Image 1: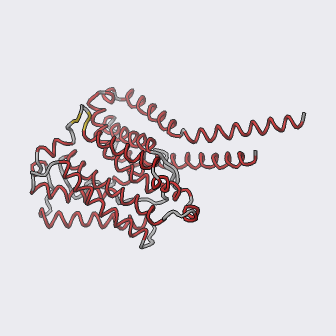
Image 2 (image 1 turned 90 degrees about the vertical axis):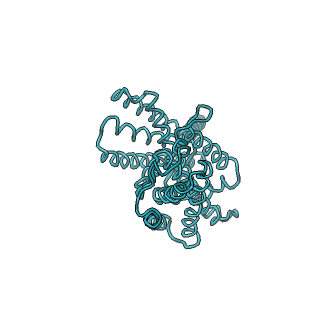
Image 3 (image 1 turned 180 degrees about the vertical axis):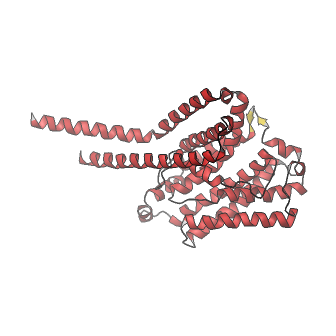
Length: 347
């Protein structure tokens, strides 16, 4: 009888452990539920929120954030961080905008490729500082954050005499690109969809993509099994640079201007979206679907702040609170996962 009870306890423990592991695997469901609740609360406060025009604007504004969040996610998965994405976006947008101001014949798709190229250089610089220079990611990107902003001011002053690149300096085709559609899908949203499909496949169905998760989970173990740690650490910064370079050009098209302070504070918004999307700060965990939801949540909050006429200073407080809450939840889930794994090994 005692033996039977013991078996029952083990089975019960095993079931609870399995349930906990399954729950951790569906973390995105909790984020989705939070998003639904958030939308309901805001729509009650402001009926305008759920109008087609407002949802359309949220989609356009969120698309750029969602694109750059993909790169930041990969960086954080490898236990790094890139706080230069805002100024990198501003510099990439400024460089391309100044070129476009003198060359109206350049089509939008070529402008985007130019932005990706500029961003790739900036991202590679970050990666080399971290991989070859052995500088901690937060210190390296804190430095380049200031460097990129300084270069933006210098280039703008040298080329445009300190004047912003405004709507009348840009071609009609480029200004219209952000709001144009293809098969009735806005171009910005379509580009974001393509980016998510590409990186979903890359992270989940390629060797290099899986190695990014392996390095983030345990760099020591990854090195033992022959993974090139330097290469896998460098790639996310390169990809992030390419994505914020693209984002910089899309930003100029969306807001029809390139200013020296474009993207100021945007790194905080991107990191918030990634953390809210369930990416573990300690590395090794995160999903494309999660950061998409996280980006939408931040886009909804940004929009609601203006609709409900809340002071913009509250937005920073809300971001800070959300990050703290997300980290606390992540820590709690991680502890429960580790406990569940230990219990499973004992069975």
